[in-house]
Length: 138
Image (cartoon, rainbow, N blue to C red; front, side, top):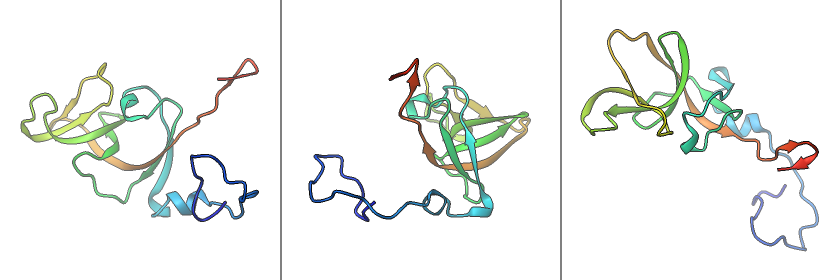
């Protein structure tokens, strides 16, 4: 593949072939000892473009910040949400909220009694865009 990338317009007849290769680990993983992959289950982040079956690249070395998409451990379960330092409904500052990207789900306030930790920050989402069912492309 050329260094300039793949253009989304009309293909150039001068470029009959692409050379080189992309090493996804080199491209997507900045901290190998702290990076993990995880597969999405559920639809709470659908409006962020994250769908069931997508693969997350999760970096545990990154600091959590307001607005980050994070894999969190909350009361014995892992969950994927945005981190917010304000109430998403009222905008009131203070506290920690886990915010879904699907209106079917409510934000969750993390309180002092919660068993909570930010497990890692999502740096990339890898998607499958071609689905084959019953021998037909969909």
